[in-house]
Length: 361
Ligand code: DCP
Ligand code: MG
Image (tube, rainbow, N blue to C red; front, side, top):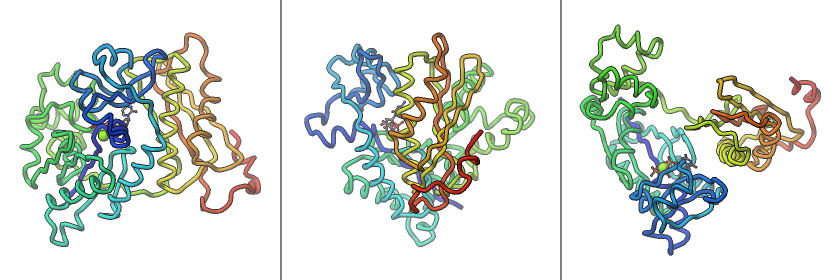
């Protein structure tokens, strides 16, 4: 049996701002772009969430709903620095860490439990270590699978700690809305509601034939998740062939400035991921999905390998802006880096023989 922890920092960007500036503590803080330039909320402190302010909301709307909210511009370098501290603490506990974003990771702590530690004790200690080292609160879920741990960590945010005891997975999941299940997106959830399936328990009760019809090849995975028995391993940091980040918009976006903001965020994500894996790449790719679902990818190969957020976003911008014609809207934007150097610690200033011809096309 495995013991998995899912850890997710509370109101991450806003919490860092409140940490660094005591004047912001206990106040509604909205981190993001300016309401004048169609900026969006990256995240809001829990004090602001009371007013309905949330991530991805236009800042102008946030200001309307919470006029006393304090708008703070994001400081990505600082968030990345904090993220690194937190991920280091995770790594001190176990080698089996799978980061999902700057503020979120799975940890496989089965080894600790085998040494005689109680899963609850491991989780309490983890929360305390993060708090002591950084001043940040992390919400933690503990369970025998990734999906149960992830759902659990979200349930009592902020500063949550939810443990699902072995054998109680199904009972735990049963009353929760199907939309909470990993892999069931908003559209699938809506279709399930239409079929009268509201909770994860409702879903777990459906006959096998129904699962096969509704989910096709994915049926066994979805069923396992609904029963709280998925076997998905915690995937540690190996060097993959490419690292990318993408996002689908709630509504299609045509404004280049707005797309530029998204691109910067994705570039930060890719760059911090590259940094964590200690690799640098030369090929930057952007992926654009248009309103009609046409997907374009455009890439270019740089002369020097990099993990720089600035270079990735600038290169991505060149590739993307060449495709932005008036009236063209995007429903998805992605940025990726590939073409990794075998040993990224070796100097990269000299091009490898043939690298130019290899990088074309
Ligand atoms: N983020 C963003 N845009 C989004 C969602 C998130 O820029 N649409 C950034 C800001 C968040 C950080 O990523 O602080 C982490 O995302 P989370 O979804 O974990 O949200 P928070 O940590 O802010 O809040 P919580 O986890 O307490 O719900
Ligand atoms: Mg978070």
